Amino acid sequence: MVEFEIPQAVMTGRTVNVTDHTRGLTSLSSNIRTLSAKMALLKSEMTASLANLPESSRNTIFETYDSIGQDLHVLLTDWSSGRTD
Image (cartoon, rainbow, N blue to C red):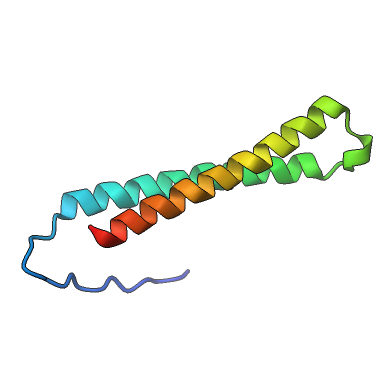
């Protein structure tokens, strides 16, 4: 099991709002679980060769792939905003 060290908050003249940071971490965690589930579904769909899949199934796979990309952008934006709070 991997253990993470939690760094101490650095006070820079403004109060650190732990509740906001906790809420942000909960949101990031939820988004990561959603992303992981989408990737697992995509992997299971990809086990069959794309050439053997009907066109509608191929489109669904590509839509899921694009959705994962969008989720990654949202996750990165949320993470970046949490770093500046």
